[in-house]
Amino acid sequence: MLAPQDQAADILTKLKAEDGMHKSAWATHVQEGTPFQSIRGAFNSFLGLPCHQPSWGNLTAIDMNTKSIAWQVPLGTVAGSQMAGVTVDATIPVGMPSLSGPITTAGGLTFFAGSMDRYIRAFDNKTGKEVWKYRMPVGAQATPMSYLSPESGRQFVVVSAGGARMTPEKGDYVIAFALPKK
Image 1 (cartoon, one colour):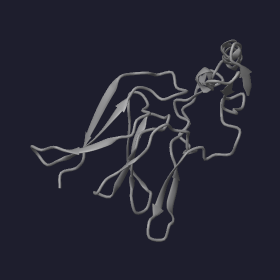
Image 2 (cartoon, one colour):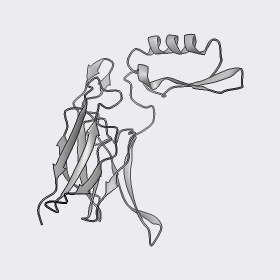
Image 3 (cartoon, helix red, strand yellow):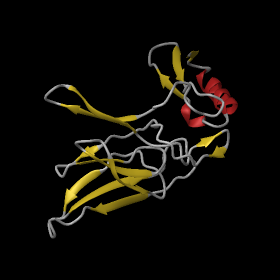
């Protein structure tokens, strides 16, 4: 929606007040030099779910030789999300919107931590099968990173977790995981 520059803040405040559950889903985009700002928000049901069929977020592997999709899996569950003010613990893999990316390692794993259900997951690069997951204290909106210890030669995966959007829990964590010794 477009709103006059001098009215956009008031309109946004009203939209957030009426939307109760998902105040963070509304945002304005200042358009310098124009008389208007755009106001956008998610098209959600009264439960706070997107109004289109799942999956709402996927991890997709591309075969670079054939330029086709090798595999695709839904990323995340609604566990820990709030809908109509109620925290949901359903672990159905519907695939959730995310604000981060994966990291793919030479060891054959892809790590992803940006789903709203607090999990960091490892997927097999060849099949897309989830081979490991860990529930963090809060969600992450960060792409994991990997490094090799210069002392031990061991590989670690690290992620910053500060809380996922549309979940009430926030934090300030840096979490490291050691990959198995070879």
